[in-house]
Image 1 (spheres, rainbow, N blue to C red):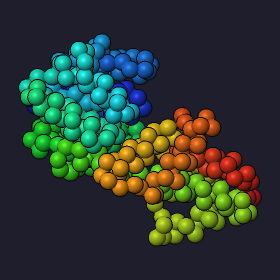
Image 2: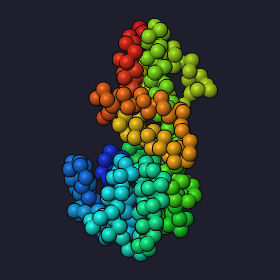
Image 3: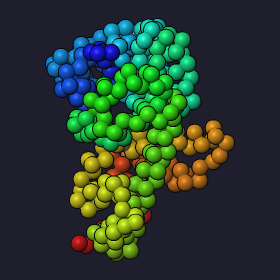
Image 4: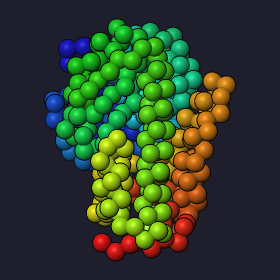
Length: 300
């Protein structure tokens, strides 16, 4: 694949950023609209070619990239007469950049292999702004020869590109990663709300907690909103966070165990969605907890 044509399905915030980066790197791009006409039109204006179905994307592309929200959505785009599988042929590669259930990923991989193509899972770490700069973390897994084939393209968007093993490993690690991230994020959001309730200055709390060993990037994302009023450093919706923690809990159940630690984050995110906050970014869980507890922000 010296100069592959890339098909992209899922022009959301992350997908659009990745597509713009690929165009910046001189890649040929085929896209299909999903919800956002504005992002699609902008990419077409930059030279992307738009088609009408996922099947046409696969037919026109050497590499098909998927960046959509749920396993059910991926399965829908893959299957059916207008799905990706219908347009695949020998030697093509399909990459799922979303956060999907590992069992679904492995099942789709078997169907892709029947077409003589390769399926890779490559969930993403970092944000759309990192995508524009080519600085994503990519947790890729699947057949090594397929990974090696597409590595130059992955390196266009990824600063740290990992090959982690057999198909589904990337999604397994991503779910563990996101479970941990959302547990920390919600614990930090609640910590600020309890500080308010106790009359403790948020900055003072952060100064102590960030002085090691608790310091983390996730802590800083929540602090950026709690203290500075900026929720955009973690541009990830509460709705998607709840989905990922739910997938993690389901994965644990399928492994024969029940996650104790996922319960709190899952409940907090679910209650927040029920209160109408689903589309807000995760740092605004601070507001959810302060309202839930009737906290008042301390002066300073």
